[in-house]
Image 1: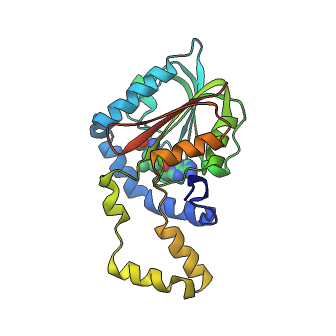
Image 2: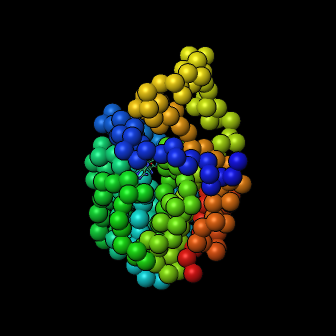
Length: 245
Ligand SMILES: C[S@@+](CC[C@H](N)C(=O)[O-])C[C@H]1O[C@@H](n2cnc3c(N)ncnc32)[C@H](O)[C@@H]1O
């Protein structure tokens, strides 16, 4: 199946927002915040930090950056020479925690604004951001589509850089999330006969958005980006980098 058609007709934004709010609740935000210190030292996080440091330092002027699905602001401290950082997230609990991000005293950022929104439904200024990044959001828990990639392109300024990670569906660490219990298999078998509202709810609840490296490449080929590079990271993720001409 073509990557582009993977999720067509399955994403009910209202239900998706509700599910994300439920999953990234106050307790999750608290746990994230407690684990920030430990988790920024994992090899995968160090790789992310190194890429963000390098990308943000490539500009000779102060830049505007956008963190899509910023969570608790775990990676704000990796950025260099930032005029304005926009942190955007669906979860108000995660966003609240981002008011006091880890290493707040070390931030090289003049101004931070936090926006409570689903990126797909957001209306951010076009051609504005020199750097857009998103860590641990697409592939799981959010779907990556050509529309999202083109939205990145629209929001980027000329010469702007994009970096985001994708949950790699070929990584076996995700197998537990893809496991279907016998009960779930039974419900799935009768799902088409259930009322539409129940059917939609279950589809949304169970939908996963994992994709492979080849599928991400297909999405980029269909997008407005001409320069892009997709590579496997140390752990579980594929890294997607692109620049706007
Ligand atoms: C796994 S957490 C990662 C948080 C942070 N980027 C990090 O690396 O620590 C995923 C975050 O993405 C947010 N999120 C998921 N889909 C989103 C979307 N479409 N728009 C904005 N935020 C989204 C969730 O609310 C959650 O805070």
